[in-house]
Length: 180
Image 1 (cartoon, rainbow, N blue to C red):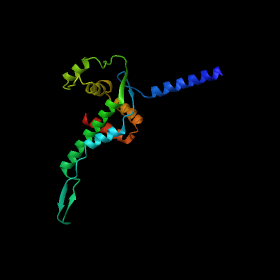
Image 2 (cartoon, helix red, strand yellow):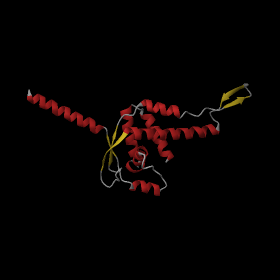
Image 3 (cartoon, rainbow, N blue to C red):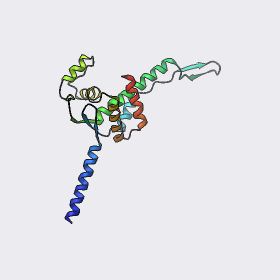
Image 4 (cartoon, helix red, strand yellow):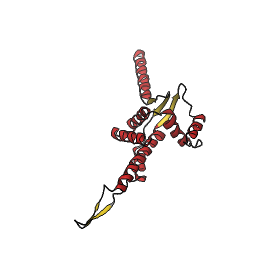
């Protein structure tokens, strides 16, 4: 009986460690982040606050009525800007709400250290070090996950926990690379 209980305890322990390690994402910098689920309602609220541009209308003399003009150059430019900014906003939400620091190895700067903030300022990127969320977002984007492959791993990890469609993650990642 004791042997069965011991085996069960080992099995439960192994499964716990497998599950907890499945949420870890090791990045090229030596930083390891834990990913977690982000509420889909949060994404919906974000989209509601950033509505898609409206298609402009034009008057079709031939038909005698107003019709949508999705080929309007101003509209196309507005759509491109909207797609880029909402894609980046979704990535920011995933980073802020769906990641936490697990460990820092090697020569990667520590989150608490201000040297990396000074380095970013020298490059013209200002980070409000007193705002923990702004600091975390900058740390992940510019220090912990500077490579496209790092960001892709993070987005896949968070989306896998959150139930976000893989195609949406791919689109956001492309927009992130295009914007940078």
